[in-house]
Each structure stands twice: as structure tokens, then as C-alpha cells.
Length: 296
Image (cartoon, rainbow, N blue to C red; front, side, top):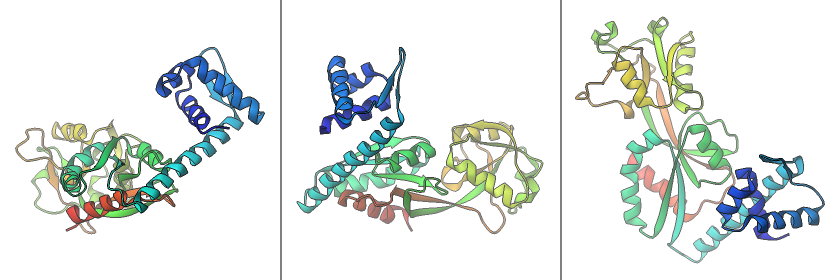
């Protein structure tokens, strides 16, 4: 069994297609098929079921891919540890980020980090919270900027920011004229606009309503909290918004933002990594830079 064969199997499993896998691996498709057949003959089991239109993992194949991914990940971690022991400043750090939250946080952090560690390449990966949790758990990102709660049990995290959650209502809404914090119980009959499933802040909204004793009446869903705020401003419903993401009052599509009565709800942003995964000096430096830049 050869190291490259592990890479080949993982890529075929990812693409579910020999042609695409060969293209990503920069080898000829016949060579890829030959290497897979050679490996399957050596280990005595089929790793894939070939059909006319697709390639699917067998049970043995799924076990092989899981173990092979762990081997490749351990090799990569070993490289990082050896680089650190050799006091190398060069390297690459893959950081996952929520797209909109990251657009508010990272412009503060990255210039400082790049100035301190100019030879470390930072690669940003933007995706949904659920996808970022998967990428971090599988070692495809070194760190990820996420919001609690996390649902992947193999992750550990360091708190970075706690921010207030506020209520957003249309400008002509009766609550917009009140000069006082709003009790969430008053919102039981209101139409809510929330993020779609898989978006982390959706869970915060549902939990706030649940603690107030009701299930929100959801009239619209979106993958983008900016779209949600525009819909609120247009009078289509209400929502909760992390204070970091509230819009400037000069924007005509701006809702009215109201504080929520005590206990003030908060959202916690964290830097997550996989439990037991070796954190390079670059990763530790990034966490410390983020703390210094954002924690007041």
C-alpha cells in the first residue's frame, strides 16, 4: 500500500467520479483506475461499487476512507510540529469563517496578524455553520470562527466575543415607538423572519422564543441575515439580530433596533478546532491575535 493510493481513494470518494478525481489529482484516468484495482487486489476487498453513472463507497471503502483521512491528517500535523520545532516562520493556516460575521471581525484581525507574521499564508474558507463544523472536525480547516451552540462533539472552542442580541422591527411597527426594552413574551403573535436550517443564529432565535414560552410564527426564511433585515425594514415581519450586524441608520432599508429586557440575550463567538488536534504556533498566534484585537 502506497501513500499516494490513500490520496487517490479519498479523492475518488469525494468526487464520486473517476474522471473528476483524476483531473483533481492531475493524473490520467486509466492510471487512477489501475492504481485502485492494484490496491483492491492487495487488500482483498472492493472499496467502490462502479455503476454506469456513479461510483459509490462499499462498507469496507467507507472504513478505508475514514482511516486514510486520519493517516493523512496525522502526517500533516507531524509536518506542522516539525516545522515548529525547527522554528520555521513560514507556513499556511486555513481559517473557516461565517461569511457575514467574518466580514465584520476579520478586517480587524487579519491586518494585525499579517503584520506580525508576514510569511504565514492565511487561507479563508467561508461556509455555513454546519459545513464549517464538518470541515473543522475533519481537519480541513485548522480553526473556524463560529457561534455557539456547536453541534459537532469532536470540536473544542475558545470564546472570543460576547455580543448583545437586539430586536429588529419595521419602522412603522407599534413597538418602534416605544422607548423601553422589549419583553420577548410580547412577540408571541408576531410574524418572524429567520435564517434557514443549518444557519447557527437560527438556533439562537428559536431558543429565545422557547424560553419565553412560545414557538415563533415563521413567515419567511433566508440564508442571509442581510436579506432578513431588508425584509424586516419592508414590513414583512420581525427578527432578532446580533448587535455586530445592525445597519447604519442612514440606510433606507434599516429596521428599528430595540433592546431586549433583562436578562439581556447574548451571542458568543468562538474559535473552534478539533479536539486533540495539534495546534501549530501559527494557529495559536492567530487565536492570541484575535483575542487581543477583539476582547475589550
